Amino acid sequence: MVLGSGTASLSPPARFVWNALMHPDLHPHNRGFAWPVMFQDAPPPRVVESSEFDRVVWSSPWPTVPEVLVQFDLRPNTQLRWTLLAHAPTPSLQTIEWLRAQASHLVNVDLRSALGH
Image 1 (cartoon, helix red, strand yellow):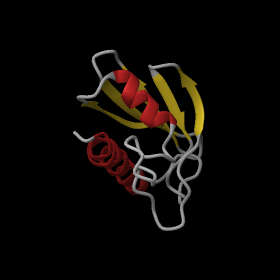
Image 2: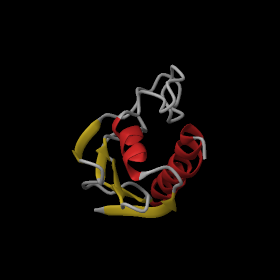
Image 3: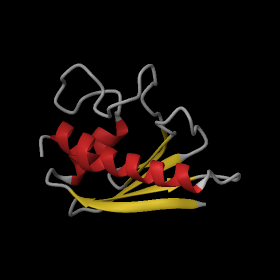
């Protein structure tokens, strides 16, 4: 079930963005830390599925909702779509709204900052 999605246009080449998504535990510019800003003591998400240069699916980066997946679809023009996916039971509306805001922040703040754009 789709809980939400959004898009972002990013400056770096799609290959570079895909590589950052494939390695959330490493900063794209080798700064020695993970690029997603994680909650205290939360491990970075793991890659559950991928397709070279166009799709990456993460396990949940949010410990309170471990059943949620985040799918990233990347187009050659570096248009990135994030989609929140979940199996039943569906989280509460309040949780879904929080997840949408977190996913948007992850892409539009954390990823952009890590990529230097």
